[in-house]
Length: 395
Image (cartoon, rainbow, N blue to C red; front, top):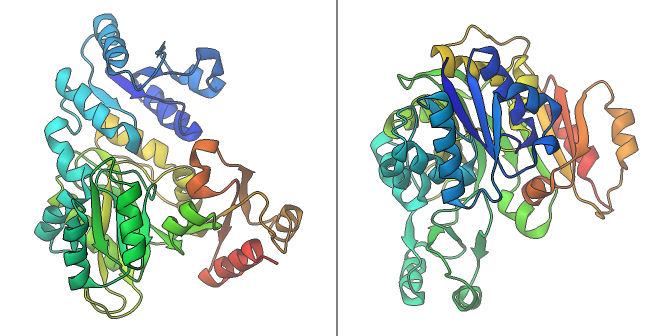
């Protein structure tokens, strides 16, 4: 029996599905987390062969000892994964130290975590990227801005999502940023007027996708995080051909194997330095599933089970699980205290036949996703847009 160590299997909450399908595929599923065992969902507890509680997942020595314990008790560890952006580097270090050869190791991390280092891989794939500089000094940034003009985007070179991302519109904001920031390395990029389209895939050991989908994000995730806008994105009923082409080229350039990935691209809203209106260009790669409730939405959009497809890839390097009827699956994240025209009860009433999920968002995800989520299936993009207007209109 093969051994799979799952780091933090309780977050996001829906990740118990990954564990259940691994168990059903014959794995010992060995969980490591900082939640009390009886604080885990019953579904997760039943999926785990054993659970090792650490006092703090940030404490590498504790997590190392947990993996060592499982190795002693069950034998060689065949897989180790969290499927979580925050722990990617930790996962890679543990794989390196325990000689686990089924995922990225420490030496692979620079190209998949540093936004500046991703540029070379995109170039290899023939995908355009925004001009940039590393924000080492005020003078260096001013020289860069003289070339590209305001506004510019500044964010941690090694960051998660849109956290700590800033849009600077003039010298005053630039100087204020330098007075307040730079605890870590930041990258500065030209502003790109675009809509984010994603390529999401489950990839086998040969680097070939066995499942593909994608999403479209309305508005700016940076504004959602920084200004408390409502969050809106939807899974497309079928991935766009040009996004699939860019995604597959990126898979090869980044050497992706045996993973669930979420690659983000810009679709240009107008002609600009990076290309013509409608062209697909690079944003960043994420070597894990799209966050939060997205896997559930992929299931609703494709009438499938991506948790099983992923677990089948781990166990068999393929999956017989196909897709069924296709939909657009739309997400709205509403904010507490925002003066919406239509109350939650009105959404329930108007979209009762479409709604799939209605609940509070976990606190750790609320910055990017809002406080209350509504997930609904629709046949057309026009219906999606009508749903967004109804759910987000404010007084």
